[in-house]
Length: 227
Image (cartoon, rainbow, N blue to C red):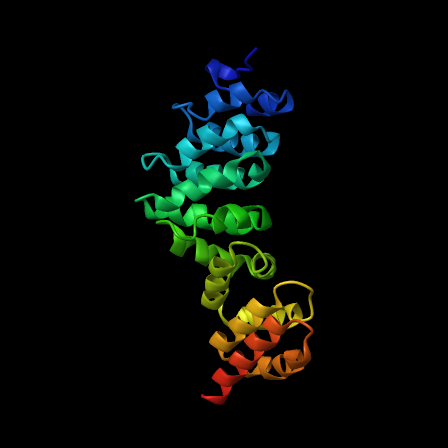
């Protein structure tokens, strides 16, 4: 059942209350009133159904659509982060439309932690530079996730991104030197970062029980000495 108002205009309030996703998706393409499309986009985010992702992507990606509709579609996709919107937003980072790229970037930043791992998998693709920008803006959660990845098979990729993130990684990396895993790669990163705050913590690892950690600490400290 669809809910129509005066002259057949979709009744967004009723469609929302009934969680009528199909009706809201149809309202998203209602050509006679832009405010209906704006309200439909907002409602689809509130209802939180994964079937809304693709129609909202289409609305965001439509350069002939009103600015307000596209913005509301982007905000709705943020609300749908657990319904698969992250992958679709990452795909939009390749869009030739600057507005779409910017909205996708901002949406991924707002989504935050759920976007980190999918973005990590795209770091060596054509959207890699945009992914790094999102990591920088997400901040601490992204840094902590990358530090955790130093003890995985993706350690080299994680280390590269931590180096690109630079100064904001120093304090979390110092804390990571006391953890059970990933201390060697952390020491190596400090040698490349060249931040003097790392010197004392690195000296502390010279007596580490792991010979690999001790070796990385010595190499890192040698780089400081040569500067």
